[in-house]
Image (cartoon, rainbow, N blue to C red; front, top):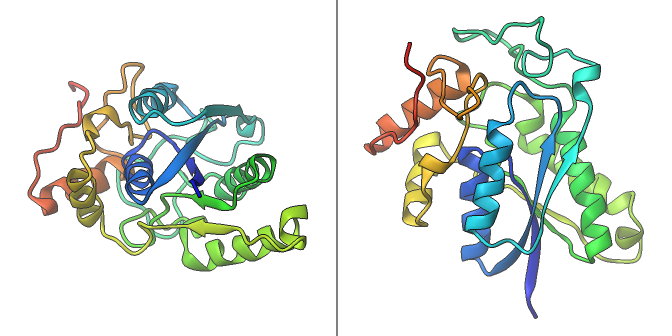
Length: 225
């Protein structure tokens, strides 16, 4: 039987590694991305390029108006993206983002008749987001199997998080072994229209450190300051 899965594809480093790993494990993949009111479209363009490169069965980009509620530096132009590390949960946290993303993936999974969903969350080298923790993923998987027709009828949804316990360096090494071209990815919170990275936000710092610790040349295109 052919295995099929939905991959949450942001266009960043972690999500493309997750897609490559799912395919390596024999899954035929559907990709799901979100235009949620983020500061730039560069990551969505990257997601579209990645989806085409990996020849996913279908790639959907869902429009969500999270900018209308604000509350995050990624969706509210009045909140600056910090250029230094912050204590606690940073202002780049987007309220309920992964809950919403996984909910859409769950709905699409029911429509497609599949039960495997992959998300590239990480609880090691991350910015302190509460919706990247194993406890959240386990709770959502429980919800998925309680709140769906498929779950009630005996199918079991599985939320796969293959990167959750890996460091950024370990993720990069894994991706390189899988043949991932990280030059095609956009991780920066303040990327310009061409996808060039700022080099100073949390996402850029984690990415830079990951390549350095992995001993691999960073292929990221950084903005000229």
